[in-house]
Image 1 (cartoon, rainbow over the protein chains, first blue to last red):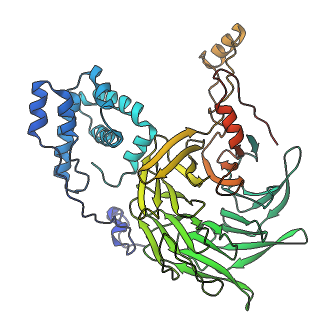
Image 2 (image 1 turned 90 degrees about the horizontal axis):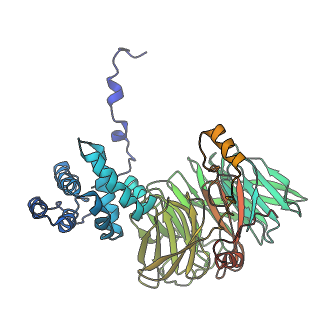
Image 3 (image 1 turned 45 degrees about the horizontal axis):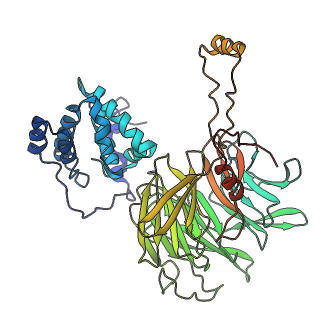
Length: 150
Length: 376
C-alpha cells in the first residue's frame, strides 16, 4: 500500500515526459513567421478596405514558433478582421483564397472557437460555413491533424 | 460492379488467389476465412485458426500459392496448401509489438512485415534449417509502420509510418538473391539503406504504393492528402490536399492513374503527370438509383406518424460501401493497366470495381437509373 493513500498528487505527473522513447517533433529550421503586423489590418478596416485587411491578416501565420504570445497576438488580429466583415461579404472573401489559404482560415476559425466571446461565435460560424463549402471535410481534418498550429 | 456482403463484421484485410476464384478475408477477428466463388455467391471452404490476436494483414502469393498472415499477437505464419488443408509455419519475426501489415515480394522469395515495434521485419526462408528467418530494418523509424509496398525489382521497400514520414528502404538479402542493378532511387543498396525519407507527410501514412515501373511512389496520409514522389525527377514530391475525409488505401492502376479510398466510403481517381501535376480526376462510384419515384399519400402520412418527419428514409449512404474502405487490391489486369480492383470495408462488404463498367456508367445521361446491385 502507498504510504499516503489520500494524496492524489501523483495523478498530475506527466508520465510521458519521463519516457526515453518519447516521440519528438523534428525541429524545423524554417524561418519563424511572426504573425501579421497589428497596425496595418486595423488601419485598413477603418478605411473600409476589408479584403486587403483580410489578406494582410492572413499573411505570415506563426506556425513555426512555439511562442504563445505571438500566436495570441496573431489570433487577436485575425479575429478582429473576421468579426468586422459583413455577412454578405464573407463568401467573396473566402473565394479569393487559394487552397492553403482556406486551410489557414479554418485553423484560425477553430482557434477562435476555443475562446468564444460575446459576438465572435455567430460570425465565426458563418465564416466556418463558407470555408467548409470551399474546403470540405478535408480542411477540417487538416486543422485537427496539423502538428504546426497557428 | 459487384458487391458481396460477407456478414456484419468489418473486413480488416483481404487477399486473392492467382485466378481470383478464392478470396481470403478476416472478419476483424483472429481467424482467416477462405471463400470459393460459386454461381450463387461465395462459399467458405477453409478456416485458418492459428493466431491468437486480431489479424491485421493477409497476403497471398499467386505463383507459389502461399498465404502469409500477421496479427496483433506479434506473430506471422506462412500457410501452404497440403492435401486440401492449409498448414501453418511459424515465422520468427522477433517483434515485441503487434504486426500491422504484411506483403510478399514480387518474386515471392521473401516478405516484409510492418509492426508497432517501430521496425520492419524482412523474412526469408532458410533451407538448411527449414525455417523462416527475419532481418530487421530499424533506421530512423520512430513509430508504428502502417503500410508497406514492394518495388518491382524485389529489393526496394516503401514504408509509411505513424511518425508522419514515408521512406524507401533496401531489403536486399544477399543469401537469397542477386545484387540489384541501379534504379532511379539509388545505386548502392545494402540491406537497410534508406533511399528516400520524406518528412512530414502531414499525418499518419495509411497507404503507400509504387507505380508499375517503380519510378514513382504514392501515399495517402491522415491529413486528407495524397502525395507522390518521383524518382527520375530528383525524388521530387508533389502533394495534393483532398476535400474529403482521410484516405486509407492507395493503388496505382497505371503509370499515371491512381485510385485511393478511405473514410469517405468510395474510391477516387487521381492522375499524376509529372512533378507538380497531381490532380483529382473523378469519384469512382456508381450513383444510387433514385427511389424517390413519388411517395403515395399513405406513405407520406405513415412517415409522419412513425418518425414525425416527411423526409425519405435517409439511413443509407449514397455510396456502394456503407462504411469506410480499408483496403484496395488489384483483381484483374497487369499492374500497368488494371481493369478491375477490389475494395473491402468496415461494412463487411467486398466490392469488385470494373473500369469498363465505370466508364459506361459515367457516360450515361443523368436521370437514368443506372445502378444495378448484382451479386456474383
